[in-house]
Length: 136
Image (tube, rainbow, N blue to C red):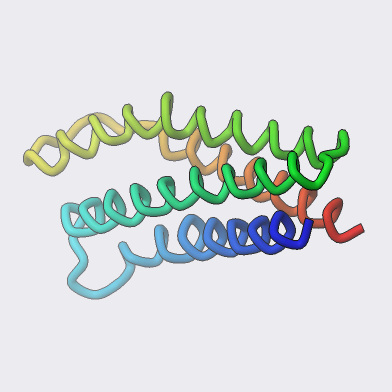
């Protein structure tokens, strides 16, 4: 269970640092254009999502080997559903939109970022709940 607990808090720290600090702040840095910010964001979020898949697998395997109970099992289930929704539903649409921006187009405003942020908030809550349950 120590591996699942540590992995949960590493995952939580990564999501908080990248989604809620790096992502919004990079567009405020001097000289960072929308195109440059999108390029950086795509690289960073691709790496984050790969890391999240690995972390989710580590947590799930550790819980199975440690004898998962209902509470942590539900939290991991929520995390997997949220991560899949981001990777399969929201990210591909965001990538298509950013492709258009990177190609010089000005597509209409989109609420996809709000959906992604909403899923990130749910993910953070599930990670906190999982971490607390694992510490108890």
